[in-house]
Each structure stands twice: as C-alpha cells, then as structure tokens.
Image (cartoon, rainbow, N blue to C red; front, side, top):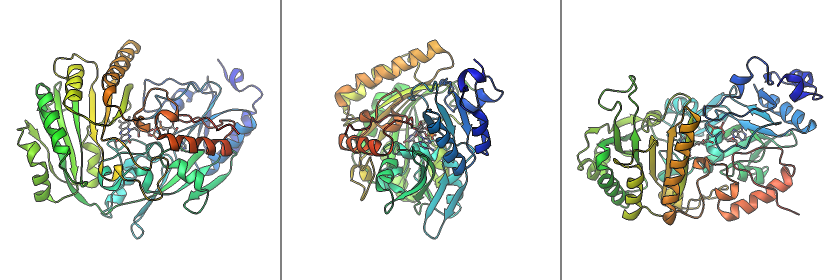
Length: 462
Ligand SMILES: Cc1cc2nc3c(=O)[nH]c(=O)nc-3n(C[C@H](O)[C@H](O)[C@H](O)COP(=O)(O)OP(=O)(O)OC[C@H]3O[C@@H](n4cnc5c(N)ncnc54)[C@H](O)[C@@H]3O)c2cc1C
C-alpha cells in the first residue's frame, strides 16, 4: 500500500498545511510509530494518523475528515485500544503531544489537555497536598479513563473520576470547538462524564481533593492461600468505611531481573488497599487482613501520587489482552469458581486477575452526575495477560472470557466501560437509561457516526 492508494483525491497537502502537528500516511516513515498505542497487541491501519499539537489542530483535522468523508478515532495513550473497531479508511487522531496541565490550588481544580497521563496531573497536584481521582496506572490517559468512568484508589470516598469533571473543551463532530459544563452544552457535558463522549475532547477540568498522605500498601500471600485470602478479604470489605478502597489480586510475576528477588517469577494472592487515614487508624483498619500473616507487607503512609505504584501495573507498553465484568456479589461459590480457574492449580496464562471492591460513594447517585451517575454493583473483576504472540493472545483472550463467563451467575446488569476490552456497544457498558439518552445525543450531534468511540452508541432513529 502506498500513500496514493489510501489518500488518493483527499488533498493531503491541505491537511498538512492546516495542522501544526504531524500527519502520517501508510508507507511513510513514522506511520507505524504514530499508529502504535500502549497496547502492542492492537494493530490498526488507519488511512491517516494526525498527531495533533493543539485544540486548533484537532478542529482542523475533524473538519478535514468531515469534508473528505472520513471517520475519526480520537486516541491518547492507546491503553484502551483493544475494543476499537478496525480503523481502515479512518483518521486516527492522536492527542499524545497535548499534555499541558494546570493546577489551581485555590479552587482545587486541574485542567489537563487531552493527551495528559495521570502522572502528569497527580505529581503537580501532590505538590499542593491535592489528589486527583487517578486509576491504578500513572501512564493511563486522563481523557480515555475519565470518559469511561474512571475507578481509582479514592473511588469509594469520592466516586468516579467522571463525576468530578467540571468542564470539557471539545471539538464537535461538525468541527466546532466548544466548552461543555453545567451551564453550556449540557448534553455534551453529560456524555463526556462516563458515556465515552460525543466529539473529540481537547481538555478536561476536574475537581481535586485534599489528600496529601494516606495509609496504603499491599499484603503478599503465596497463591496457594488464594481461597482463604479471598474469603477473608470479601468478609472484611463488608465492614470497611468509604475511606477504604481495596482490591484482591491474583498476580503471576515473570522471572524478570528488574523485579525484587523475593517476588521474581512467583505467583501471589495480594490484598491492596488505600485508606484515607493516618498510620494508627490505617493500621487498625487493615488489622484483620494483616492478622492473616502475609509474607510481605508494604503498608505505610505514602504521598497520594505514589498510589500509582500500588497495583504494579506494567510501566511500559505491552501486548495485552483482557476482559472484565461488574459483579453484584462475590460469595463463597464465586470465589471457588474463580480459584478453580485462576488459583494455584490452574496453570492459566492469565498474569493478573483483580477483584475490586465498589460501593461507598460509587453506589450513591452523584449530584448532577453524568452518564454513569452511580454503579449498581459491589465488585468488579478484570482478568488480563501479556500476549507477545498471536497464538498466546488467543489463549489469553479465551481464558479471560472463560473467567468472565464462569462468574456469569453473579454478573451485574451491565459491564464496566473501561474494563470491557472485547468490542462491545455502549449499551453493554452503560445503564439502560444512559444508553438511551446517549443515542438521542448522538442523533443530535453525530448522526453520521463520524466519531469512532471505544464502545459505539448508534444514533436514535427519529
Ligand atoms: C495498565 C492499565 C491500568 C488501568 N487501570 C484502570 C483503573 O484503575 N481504573 C479504570 O477505570 N480504568 C483503568 N484502565 C482502563 C483505562 O481507563 C481504559 O483503557 C481507558 O480507555 C484508557 O484511556 P486512554 O486515554 O489511556 O486510552 P486510549 O486508548 O488513548 O483511549 C481510549 C478511548 O477513549 C476515548 N478517547 C481517548 N481520548 C479521547 C479524546 N481526546 N476525545 C474523545 N475520546 C477520546 C476513545 O474512545 C478511545 O478509543 C486501565 C488500563 C490499563 C491498560
């Protein structure tokens, strides 16, 4: 394939002249690098990649695409690329270069450009004793994460990141740069907050919270104790206040030399928690888990930005496959089912299976909230593995699906937007009423489906 095959008649020079950022087409040096996101297992071949440098670039790119009958897939880091539809004939609009962040300690807010990662926000916010509602990985993009809800270490106390968004700047599918907030463009503002959005976000503004230090860490148990540890953790989750957000993690670590010797190449059942508490109160909260006798205990007072290291997410791009589901409950039978598939005797290719505790603020409708105003589920499971070769990728995908299907008796009504890595419509990852409203908004703003979202919503018919 060469440039003239894919962009024939599309006046590529006009696009290059209109944007200050870079434009790549198949066959051109830099195209492969420009189209590659964090998840190395995803191999999309868009007709053109625009590496936008500014909101003005995004506007020009969307107008160009519209004028030339192309669809547009916005992307930041590419952490969430797995569920995307094929991008043949489409424009991949990357915001990776747009990473400016402004922290306003007086109003306790942050403004992050669309390509910012969580570390870009949490580190400068931390200098003011403030925390953002980041997730487990500091490299995940603020925008994609927030558009899909955003479940992080402070979620049971402060809710989904999406419901702390105070404004979004975005380019509509018609190519207009608008500001959406409680007073302007209320439908676009609603859709951005957990519904995947409608348009291309160029920046988000969000509330920050006064969290400087907190008590957090991991307890490592040999995976042979998985059933006992999961049961004890599940019982404990029924007792903790909203100030505690935790997860149970079955983790198989590779024999990588960069890992500390005591954990290298081993498999663990790990209990991880963040407690909005001082050291004494935190130790009291964690006491019942500590009394299980972990072989390694990392709990300590840490600065809020250090929460990004708690879950040991891979810091570099990996070829990843996974799947997840909201669970209404996690009773003993569900634990036994999970341990049979992923416990000590399972021989599974899945490197990581997390069960996150929900509830707290997540269960209460956020006042004036967006497309995910609350979560009607008590736990969230996510199973994943690294898949450097296609046959291994298929095995991991099959295993992740097997875990999800085996837990079907405990599934909640829909799945979590950000952890649904199989291609699925937005109807599968949103409350039904939210999906219907999203369809109406799509009909008004994007009837031609110009924007390609991780989980598509089809415009409502008139
Ligand atoms: C290691 C790892 C850890 C994770 N931890 C968590 C976690 O703790 N909590 C959680 O909730 N999720 C978590 N996730 C899931 C993550 O939130 C989703 O994968 C999310 O989509 C990533 O956003 P991104 O911008 O980094 O990815 P991208 O792949 O760049 O974007 C994902 C999607 O978001 C949309 N999007 C991105 N940018 C724009 C834009 N500018 N305008 C409009 N739409 C846009 C598009 O639909 C795009 O396909 C994790 C994922 C990984 C791989």
